[in-house]
Image (tube, rainbow, N blue to C red; front, side, top):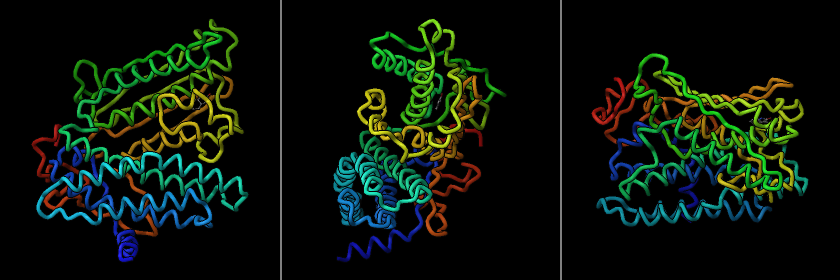
Length: 384
Ligand code: W6P
């Protein structure tokens, strides 16, 4: 069918990374153009990527997953945006979102199955493969969610995202999860959230470090880290008194260019043997799947993807996530995020030496450096 050759053609096109600046500034019609152009390219790449797995066609899940992406791809490709009627596109994007809502579970099932079959899937192949697949997935999820939100007159990106508020919310949830999970023994951790005064006086109103970000990503990452620290704290303590003597300390700080969040526990650190696999998707024990702890609050956990996925969320918009362990003392997680809209650009996986396009929407000229050349500079709240 012609659509399949279209997949091959589009998979070889460069995807265009967006910056948060563009995402929040674009009018609904531009968001539509963007989704209409970017989504098929990115889905096509995903289809091709599935074909990179040796023996993919023997896995029913992978065949199904590939077909799901193909359906999304065709729906979008058959849309004609010429008369600026967004109805068809909105229907297609909404369908896409629903179709792919179970995609990661399906993928992780497939990976598990391939491993159990003893197929020669090397971790050195699989881990970077999953990093690329999931990073790309974060991007399309962001695009579809943003499209749907902007048709409803809202946005998934917040201009005034306060990291301290998000940390407090995640802390509350983590404590609640502890109480649920350790009900029988009535344990819960202490979490102190501290906000440092701003380094320099950039945009720091009333001691807050607000920045443009996707709040749900930040919440996901902080909660994931807190869950790990909380679990380790409780499981290495012998009494509630001991738990309370070892509070988890969250520190939020920022300067003009970045927001940093440090999460420190006193749970004894990460053993050497474990350090390797905290970032692994494929290391997971069967019983974590039925673990209440893993299923609460954050999607997709339960396959042991929480930490690697958090790191991808951080990297997706130009940030980073690092873990440092002090044996015998505890673990510190460092989350660094880009504070400026123009710096917070999508980091997309690169394929076979391709280069990425610079400009996302015709007429929107975003060079790397500054917003000054962008047609939305007036709506950009940042120093030029
Ligand atoms: C631990 C193990 C771990 C993983 C990730 C984040 C924090 C922590 N603390 O003991």
